[in-house]
Image: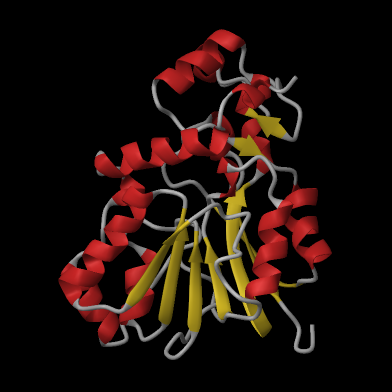
Length: 267
C-alpha cells in the first residue's frame, strides 16, 4: 500500500507552503513597489526558470487574460497585472495567495486570487484564459497529467501554456553528502520518483514532522508527453542551469526545463 494513503498528502503540502510563506522564503517574498512601478512603464520580466524567458514566449501581455497556476507568492502575478494583463493566480496555499493580495492592495493592482489544487481547475469555465503561466510546482502533486488536461481545457484556442519543471535526473541520485564530497553520483531511485515511496519510513516520518513539502519526480513522458496527449502542440523548449547548485548533478547539465505549448485554433 502506498505510504501516502494513510494521510492527506495535499493538505500536508498546503500546510508546508503556508509555513514557508510565513517564514519569508525565496518564493514567498513579494516584489517591491519600485518593480511594480517599472512594470507599469513597460519594464518588466517574469521567470519560469532562473534566467529570462526565451524571446517570443511572452513578449506582450497587455489585455491578455493570464492564469498564474500554482505560482502565488507575490511575484509573477502582480508584475503581469502591472504590465496590463488581466491576472488570476491559483495556488494551494492561502498564505502564498495572501502575498499576491498584499501587493495588489499596496500598489493598487487588480488581480484575482483563488485557492485550490492545480489538478482541478473546475473553478474556471472552458476557454477562460489566453495564457497559463506555470513555473516549477508540479513536483508537489503525485500525478501531473490532470494538470495538463485542465490547462488545455481552460485555454482559448490559440492560447499558450508556459510551464517549467525539473529535469527528472535530479531525483535519481543518492543524496548522501559523503558521496557528493567525493564527487560521486550514485543512482538510487527509479523514475517516477516519490518521497512517499522512496524514503524509508523513519526518513519520511521525519520529513513530515519537519513540515517539509513532499515531492514527486515525474518522467518526461508525463511532463512533455502528457502535454502532447492533452492536445497541445509543443512550440518551444528551453533548458536552464541551476545558478546555486544544490546537488552534484546540477554542476554538469541544465536541470531546469521549460516548455511553450500551444492550443491550436479550432482545438
